[in-house]
Image (tube, rainbow, N blue to C red; front, side):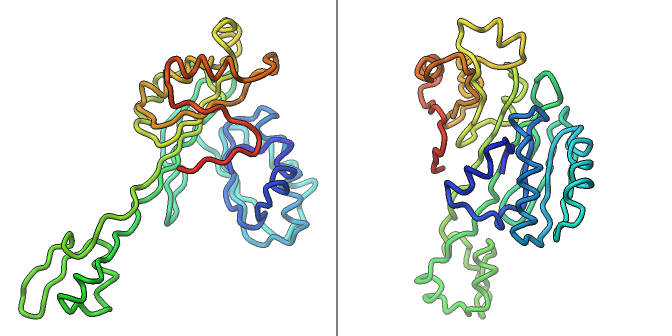
Length: 270
């Protein structure tokens, strides 16, 4: 999960998500709308009988924020919370497991803020069973072939892997950038992502306010997406001064056509 605002438990229940499947929470920065849901959420996980470790990642200050809460309210929980402090000033690998790598994206906000790039690992190749049967390949050899190995026949012939498999599903990449002012330095990091979420707090008429508060306009978010060659842009984090998001969406689409305006409970397939 990325960020943890006050309504997170309500949204989990609305979407019928399984609380127990959550292992990692990535916090972008320590403004309340991004982290005030953590104390209650952590406590609820304990009441639900969680036993597996929960990992919370965030920029400098995340431990100072969470440790007193854990000590005061959560010291008898049946599970552990591990806090991982991220250097918000540098791009680095911050988490890796068997299916995904997560990298930090240095952002520019009023306090230390970090975005996240989620990069799916390459999927296994698909075995061409007809070819495997044609060459009488033993079943025990299938895992190595799926991983990319060639096959040597009993008489010494090498059968190239490309004759025995087809490419797996291309890995997907998602970048999350909130909150930040216009920050072109992130473009090389997010180059070619399948989906970019970028805050779009203000319209162009309020550009001065965006600069003052270290936020972005919808056009600036779209310009980042255009420069990065993103496949799609998802904008969000709208200022409450706007009655609807249509103006923000139109401004972004004037620069980067494949822009979507985020709303509550939206689901996007990559």
